[in-house]
Length: 80
Image 1 (cartoon, helix red, strand yellow):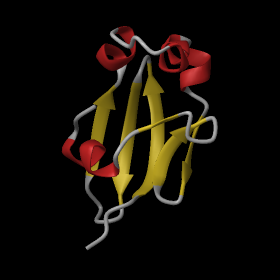
Image 2 (image 1 turned 45 degrees about the vertical axis):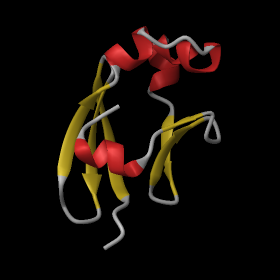
Image 3 (image 1 turned 90 degrees about the horizontal axis):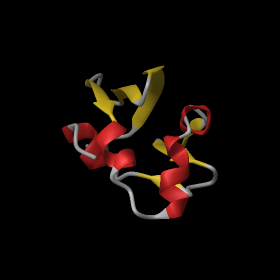
């Protein structure tokens, strides 16, 4: 079975609730990842307004045309 993200809901701070194609749901807090980022392209998403500007494209979450994205399986496992 191929897993994809069917819905992503911003919950506040750096948390996003994901719904996957198999009806699994995970809430992931991206704060530690973002606060420890070294790459300037990633660090800019510490700005909560920018962080909220994600979209679901081809069953995957992405920011600014895949400037920042994560493997679906990692998100499914609740890991960033």
